[in-house]
Length: 529
Image (cartoon, rainbow, N blue to C red; front, top):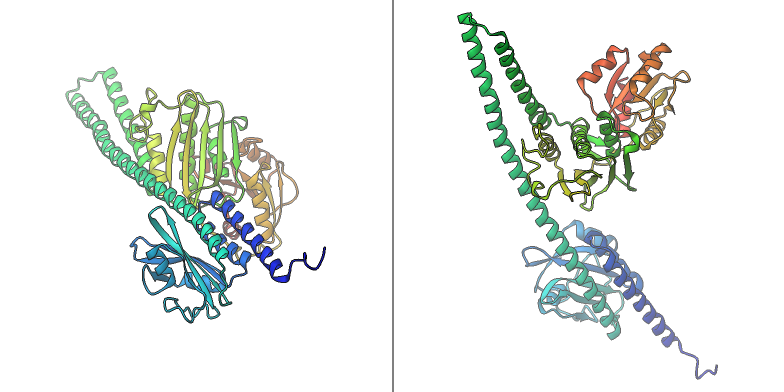
């Protein structure tokens, strides 16, 4: 190649810059089609613009609900973080390039910011020498604007402006789509909340009338029995019928109290591993291990829930599935699409729910099954609502039903500043996710711990999971009784119930406690042992 054909240095820089522009444009195109969460999308766009061009700063402003102000939603580096924390905003149409670009829906360039009277001089960005402001618009609607700043004067070429505006247009479409989805989610949430309150109001009204109707026969029957006893004219068969009527009515009233009123009053939320709580509920209602499949997504946080009441909810749902002739249930647990929540889905392969019943199943005393009071799902709704969560259902006849539960995610927990001195713990449990967590948690507390299904070694404390799949917990207790070590045993359970706890204590176990789901709770358990 002759010297005449060799590209000069300026031409090489132009080709390299052009390649970076095209690469950045392709990156933006890929990102905007795959990310619909603005808190993730906007910072990535800012970084792509600055990294591809070597620019000093980039920021994205979005117009707020008033339509008067553009609020900074993403900014490059430390300066951007400070401005976001301060709630930095610029007036639409005001004395700034961002305000001007949004008002007139045109790009505005300051090749030398010292000469541009509209340029907003920001003390956090003292080295800016040239700036371009690009409107973010979809159709006739302006959503905000992008600012790109350089430490060089006259840093923006015509091709830069064209490429940056193309990227801004792509970004505007992505922002519009994300906002539309958020608006739809808010509308659906408001509709669901309205339906929930409507169902709760209807359930409360029905409960009042129902309890009144059940209490009325008790009082009239008692008066009749008193009259018979006073007169001495006693019909033994009639007396037994009256007593049975009183017993049935009282039992149903207590059922309302236990299923509707108790769960709402007794909430004690704590961090919970939802898949483990689901296994505990399945064990309590007699679902066999081969009937249940549990899938847990990666990075699933703990939920904030009262595990005793949540076991009741899941138990009701499992029983309903079995009564609908389901032979298999699949539990899926993972981070919810809605930030700050954990999702738990229960799918069964039963008969499904008739379409005309889908809007009525949450009401009290409504049931598709003869002889049922219809309180189970109403109780589920009450408990989940009290936990600030949501529950819904989807179903097709012949294809089973899927119940969708959202619960708030628990806040992060930090390692407690406690260490168990020279302690040795034996964990009687299946080889599952909770057991792995338990061993790691105990190790982090300085405890020597091992897992087994048989009595072994000389531990200071023996923890046995109530929801064992390998064998009934009663069999474990009996084996430790035979080894004269039952006094070392602590039963851990996702749901404390008085009758079972009493039976364990009568058998000689040391204690029965709620199962720990955080290192903090393990620390508390060890200090209370």
